[in-house]
Amino acid sequence: MEALLPSFFFTLSSLSIFLLLPPVVSPFTVIMSDSSDPSALVDAPQNGLPSGKAPIRTDPMEQAAIYDVMRATGNGWATEIPDVCGGRWHGIECMPDKDGIHHVVSLSFGALSDDTAFPTCEPVRSYISGSVTKLPHLRTLFFYRCFTSNPQPIPAFLGRLGPSLRTLVLRENGHVGPIPAELGNLTQLRVLDLHKNQLNGSIPDSLDQIAGLRSLDLSNNRLNGPIPRLSLPLLNVMDLNQNLLTGPIPDSLGSCPSLIKLDISRNRLNGPIPDSVGSLADLMLMDLSYNRLNGPLPGSISNLGALQAFVLKGNPMGPERVMPDRGLDGLKSLMVLVLSGMNLHGPIPESLARLPSLRVLHLDSNSLTGPIPWAFKSLKNLSELRLNDNRLAGPVPFERETLWRMKRKLRLYNNSGLCFLSSSGIEEDWTADFGAGIGACDSVGSVPEGTVQHVSESENGDGHEKRNVPSSSSSSSGATILKLLLSLGLVEFTALLLLLNSVLL
Ligand SMILES: *[C@@H]1O[C@H](CO)[C@@H](O)[C@H](O)[C@H]1NC(C)=O
Ligand SMILES: *[C@@H]1O[C@H](CO)[C@@H](O)[C@H](O)[C@H]1NC(C)=O
Ligand SMILES: *[C@@H]1O[C@H](CO)[C@@H](O)[C@H](O)[C@H]1NC(C)=O
Ligand SMILES: *[C@@H]1O[C@H](CO)[C@@H](O)[C@H](O)[C@H]1NC(C)=O
Image (cartoon, rainbow, N blue to C red; front, side, top):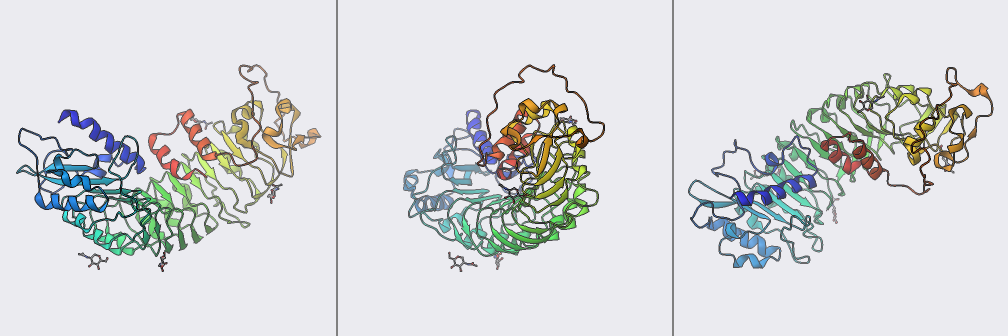
């Protein structure tokens, strides 16, 4: 028994990382049932080693069902195994009941990683056998890259999977057609992951019946229609990115108070951001980019004290006022703010300099005018700043130290009137790295008051390290952000996992 545990644990943990589940939901509560589960099963799942001297006995009904399911995926070899719970293949887990009869609790397919080699599916003819509904103790059903060469709808009979089902993953399987409303009958589900299929039609309202749902990932499909009103008190992750969803962001989002990650980017959503998002006290990542949302941002945004990344890029909200009256004050955890390509006009809000945790700020490709606020000098943690492709003017408020810190992650090119102060000491470093075409400010007259200081030249440690000229093509900013966050050691595991998906812009 003891010897079994490591591999079992390993499987679970890599699975949960793959699903991008935040650690607040422990993998064990997600993937296995907890002790409050009324099922008659005892002990921990086993990969087929007898727990005592007695040989394993699998429930005969379930055994026959497993043969069917395995045959349907081209894994006929399994039918040679006289006792599937003793079969010891990765991808099946069983638990005994009090009489020592073993029941199948988890079934997984697809080459997830080198460490978790679940049985693969025969590419051309595989399908999901209806016999999966004859596994009443099943908690996890997992198919990954299984039916890609045999595109088929998600069968409605999955709605009849047993009452113990906690996790249903049908990821990158090439499924076509609608999401069956019957999935709403899986009321004990915690994880529903249909990522990257070719599902169309609208998101069924019936999903609102799954009161215990923790993670809903319907991203990378062709779902259309509105986002349904979902009031799911325990939902941590809602990922609907890259679909064809239309209509407004429903204010029922406020009835999902446990949300940590909300990604509805790359859809066709319109209308304003509802006030109710301000009640999402645990929200850490909000990605609304590439929609057709209107401004201004609701004032309630400033209640999001846990928010670490806010991505609004590609919503042409301007030219009218977009920032709420209080600015973004209150977002004290905000590290990443991406407001590129939003048709923003007017000056850069000075209030952005009051975001104490800010590390990454993108305001590029707008029509911002006026100077870079002098207060930006105080953003000592700022490591990436994009102000390129605007109409900013006046002196760049940074000194050599800041330039060295940001290197290629400072982008100022294509602004009408930015210049640098000779007093800043950056002159000799000023190359195309930072902003081609930006010259020295021609008169002291343009220097804001109280800023004429001479920079100490004492920090010559690695001051002259090589800098690369930035490629004009898009560098992978997402990877950069991640590396940055990693290198600063700032973000806990949670945030990294949450960011992974979406900040890869
Ligand atoms: C399952 O859900 C569908 C549609 O949501 C419903 O019509 C059907 O009666 C349900 N079936 C069971 C067995 O509850
Ligand atoms: C979904 O796509 C199929 C073709 O793949 C099409 O026949 C069907 O009408 C579509 N359904 C909806 C609701 O868009
Ligand atoms: C920079 O980040 C550190 C670590 O998160 C924090 O303690 C510090 O207050 C921040 N500095 C500024 C100037 O905000
Ligand atoms: C400069 O930025 C403006 C947006 O302010 C953009 O419209 C224009 O295409 C950019 N020019 C170049 C050469 O990229």
